[in-house]
Image: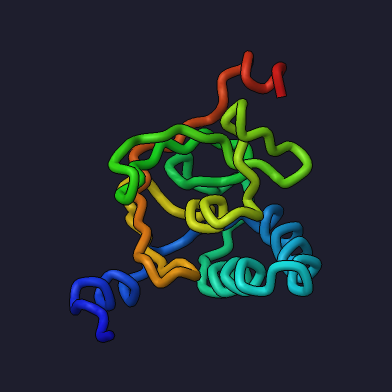
Length: 146
């Protein structure tokens, strides 16, 4: 079955990514370690990191989804908005809205700027999409609770 032109166009159009140099080192190591357990996810993360623009941590724009930042996005499949905090796997707690960067949604969000949309094909060949609506630093109370 042939994909609809709009679907293939969405998959080819990839938004620009920006990653801090500090996060890059750890993300690459995590992806390499995950290759044997979940090669699809690890390769997707490595591919995204490979095309990202790398900047020093203090020059990372505040409008870019990064580790420790709150990201509000629109999930096109579920037709709803959701706010999560991107974290490393050891700090993940889905009930508290802390999403690991080593999950499909974490890989999709990392490095995206406000207004960017990202589409990907799932293992079941469905097209998923999201748009970053807002990126914010966590409030002090969120840092204490983490």
